Length: 232
Image 1 (tube, helix red, strand yellow):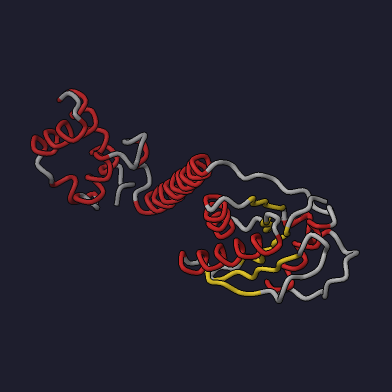
Image 2: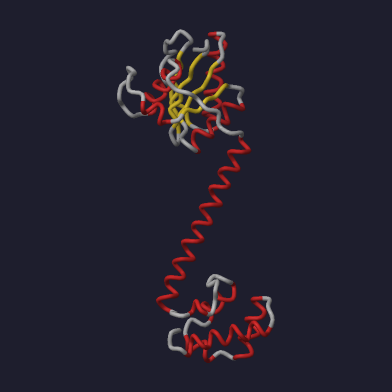
């Protein structure tokens, strides 16, 4: 293994534990805790640079991938000119033959990760650049928003099928601006049938930005639904 100081990091939501292993495999001091704030991370950075100066060898920081929380630490320490490695939790959890207490806490995790890396039992990976990571986050958020929109649309369609059977024959897209206007302003067959024809046709044409011919066709389709007794 490389002649480096190994710093295992047990990452948690608000704070993380740090365990330092010297090049000869001994633990340097006791594992310590620091908050995942700018102030807390700066204190850790200062301490690690002092250890590097004392032992005259560089540090390599190793942590499990925990999504957002490990990403914050990775980019901070990377920008602070430390070598930082991310390991897959599956690797560390699958290794049993190591003399570390089988207790799940971040302090033990920090030491276990450092030792496993020191022994060459785990293979680190380099996370993508910050810009790529941010794009990945945006893509995940976009996909979630699309999924949410689909869910809400399906719920709306289900409710309309119960309250206004046949309404879908008038609109291929129930969530269009015109459809939502009709649902909001004419929520019953009675209101739709009593609406002024010319006014409603004008509204349909204006909202859809289509011709009066299209609006008249759409109006007739809505009236057919209302008169059929399905649109209640």
